[in-house]
Amino acid sequence: MDTNAKEYFNLANQYFDSSKLLIETIIENKNQNIGIGFSENEAMLNMVYNIKKSDARLLIPALFLGYQSMELYIKGLLLLKKEKIKYDHNVKVFYIQLKKCYGENSNICRGIDDFYENQIKILNNYKEKNRINSIKDLYESFRYPEIRNGNIDHLNLKYNGEKVVTQLKTLLHQMTKIEQEVLKEYSNNENCSK
Image (cartoon, rainbow, N blue to C red; front, side):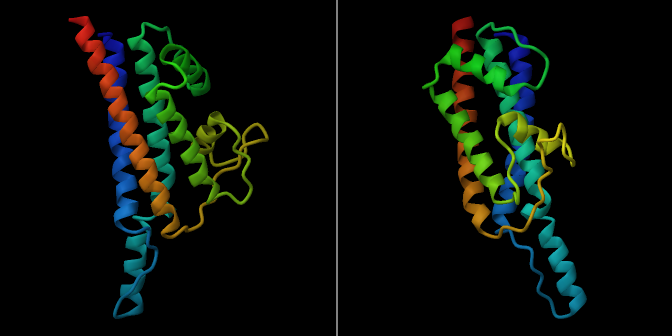
């Protein structure tokens, strides 16, 4: 087992678990942003509390952490195959390399395709002007709050109610499937190394 691959998987799992925790928080809170109370002040405090557990505060970090975990899983999988990787964030290049190693129709590649497609669908709910056309654009929109190179808008969130809850449940399911596929590859590689 490549020690670097193991470290990539360990770090990916940390990002994955953090993303999962934020997504589960939004789902469990039913993405509410209202506050009810016996006084205006109590209702306001309840609303502020609920907003902190809604898409208005947690969605971008949840998606970013999920995205980062996928990048690290991809790099770890490449290292399992003894592939050389550059130390940058061009996930598109790494993903093309991964498809060559594992096959476009492998469970791991199909799962990652579904994950990215669903993230873009979720983000489309929040975009007034959607100019995200690639995985790189998606990643850049998570990281910077301004237009960069003339083609990336920062995501202006609007409250999306329960609509996003269903999509987040799907995303969580997809992420878990990818994690299971990565663990299979890791285990298979461990068994071959012995």
